[in-house]
Amino acid sequence: MLSASLADRRLLPEGRLAGPMPWVIAIMMFLTALAMAGGMAMGAAATRIESDLGRQLTVQVIVADPAQRDRETAAATHILSTQTGVLAVNRLGDDKLRALLRPWLGNAGLDRDLPLPAMIDVDLDANGRGRIDAIAGAVRAAAPHARFDDHANWLAPLLGLIRSLGLLAAGIVALMVGATAAAVVLAARSALNTHRQTIDVMHMMGATDVQVARLFQRRLALDAVFGGAVGLAGAVAVILLIGERIGEIGSGLIGSVTLPASAWAALLILPLVAGLLALAVARITVQRALGRIL
Amino acid sequence: MAGIVQFENVGLRYGTGAETLSDLSFSLAQGGFYFLTGPSGAGKTSLLKMLYLAQRPSRGSIRLFGEDVVELRRSRLPGFRRRIGMVFQDFRLIQHISAFDNIALPLRIAGVDERDLVTPVREMLAWVGLADRASARPPTLSGGEQQRVAIARAVIGRPEILVADEPTGNVDPEMAARLLHLFDALNTLGTTIVVATHDIHLLRRVAGANVMRLDRGRLHDPTGALRYPPRAGQDYGEGGA
Image 1 (spheres, rainbow over the protein chains, first blue to last red):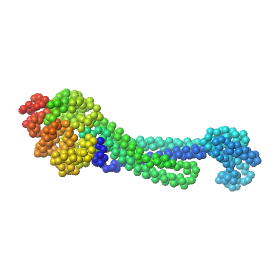
Image 2 (image 1 turned 45 degrees about the horizontal axis):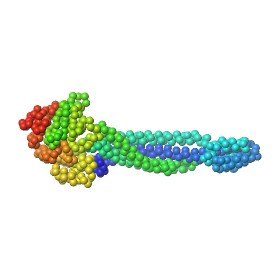
Image 3 (image 1 turned 45 degrees about the vertical axis):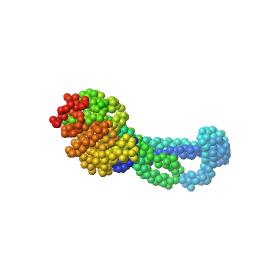
């Protein structure tokens, strides 16, 4: 019904992009894409931090007597390497420890008499996190001066912040979708008023509401796809720029904020989603408005 | 002849004001030719609106094609409207599409394939004498040409009823006569014609036509003419004839 697209298009005379709607949607989609990218990058970062850094422990053996420290460290290393859930055990050498402390103490503070704790880096597998207490108990039995530093403890607030930012981004996306839908409603109402005479004529000739709505929904959907594409192009440029800056920082934590391929795919279909949203909203708006006319 | 339109005690009120139309009861025969006359403000356009289903009555019963349309579901209205052709005094052509597309519109709405509508539209253009103006847009057509496009658009779907509201109001007497001739030709093919007009000279141009006269919202039918056929020497109203 009334599916001859060329004939359909002729019924609504305004050329595409004649009104502000595509540009309003372009701005909305630009902000939506940025919020989406931010949210998805945060989500990916949280997952990565949790899976990588969250599965690490540091065991410190703090005892002043170097001989006892070495004995307990060796015992702890041995116990750790035999535990289920432990992937790797790596004792940090004195040189590495001094290198870590040098920024704070300087060369003068790192004389050979300064007692340093022995440190053991432990990587856990997926089962290891649930066995931390058991592993710690076994180690302490052999090395009473061993202290456990679970990286997940100090990462928890950071993960909470990242997840909050992700939720904030999701909220912004939801608001933007709502605002985009509202813009489409306004555009549809405006188009209905502009083309009221055409609608009346079509109605008198027996056009159904669906046929009339189809004229408007396609126009508005195309406007939304165009606006979505423009907004997405701007957002992608910004995202790439920010990615480049993040890469220059070189921090492990900040460097984990990257967009996975699935996020890029979600961003790229944003114009299509905008078009479908406009299609549905325009259809509902127009059909509701027409329903008030006999 | 069967009544294709039946009004029974129909009243129409806009908002909370007085009734614009009151106690309308009449029957239009299938294949009949009817003039609706009366002074300005008598309610002719309101009556026509109810006839072409643009307005529901406030009370009473209207039957079209044998079915009560007062309580008809909105979703069923398009099917009824496709059986009624409309011609307006102000033409109501879509200004930005060609004469061809204006005339083709009812067929496109009815779902006729693009390939199948070219021939009937061209035939219709020729019938109204506009074969060479197919691609012209309404603003470039004269009043008479626009009216003929409007008539062609109204009849291309072969409506069972053609309703014309002051169709000769914007054309010269010669063109008015030609338009009436077109209506008469359609009527001969079996279409029921209802023409609302101020022009009392039109009333005598169609032999056997019936006259309905509205005055202050009421139908005057002292001679029983609406019950078909009209009696000889009937009062045409407007002091004319």
